Length: 370
Image 1 (cartoon, rainbow, N blue to C red):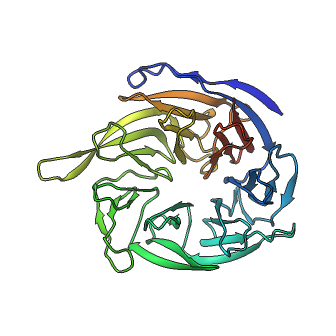
Image 2 (image 1 turned 180 degrees about the vertical axis):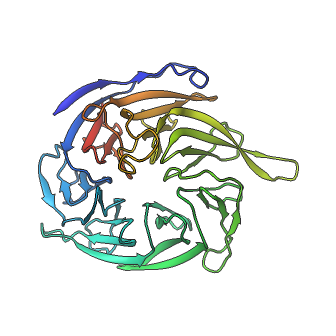
Image 3 (image 1 turned 90 degrees about the vertical axis):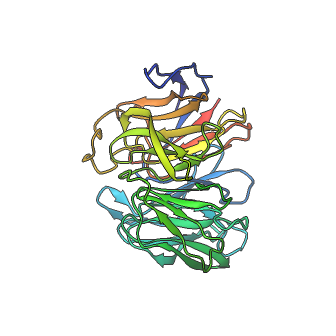
């Protein structure tokens, strides 16, 4: 099922000032599943990207054939599968993936057997409730570490040290709903960001002490929080979504004469809700990143502000002063497409353009850039 979509710029006053370049997408509905995570990875080593979502993987480039990974346990409206991060954990040449969930509170990796059999699940750590997981190269060694977002529980990351082995690094005694990574204070070390504030990285990660800066209190916000210098002042700013209410905004970093860091909030889109997951990527190849975001469908099973509003997926262009909002998909359930907890981007058909794979309780779909 394919529908041709033309991306439109919404004329929202006060924060939209220029015209979009109108990137076009074509929607391909993959499955009427309600898993909330999808990863792009080479499952069968044929050189063509595949999709992994929930209990299944879908063979690229058409994604018509699907294969069982193993049944994912369901808790009410949720499946215990809140991330899909490709990683060859056992170094056997087959890509595995990292996931975790809220109800069992376990950070796990699922082993790709490479032979069509069901995948084996291995526990990395029992962390407590996992909102989702992200992977960043925190120590700069070229390999990403795993950082689960565990609201109101200790903040830590997990480093791969050998096949099937991870080492835990404690950061701080608590964290909020929301997680980001980037250099806040300009010391060339990557800091961690939570909804409670930011955690300054020490010179040595193994024995150093992270310093917590309670600079802000943002509430239940997006994973990730994007860290980037938007206005070119050589200080990294934050792009933040409200994960369980209305609003998408950016936080401008500012410093006083004593070099004290503060942040000033600027709206991007105050009119839509459940901006739970964001991606910051160069969609059109012009050297400038675009922001991809959308509404997480039924984030709290209909109990959040704006849950019954129409759902959508968007990209936002930064014009040097503000963001231009562009619609990829929008409408009521069955017409518009929202997000889940974790979506992925990549060139799925080899045409050199970035496509978007997005899951959620409203199904699994791919938006092919035309």
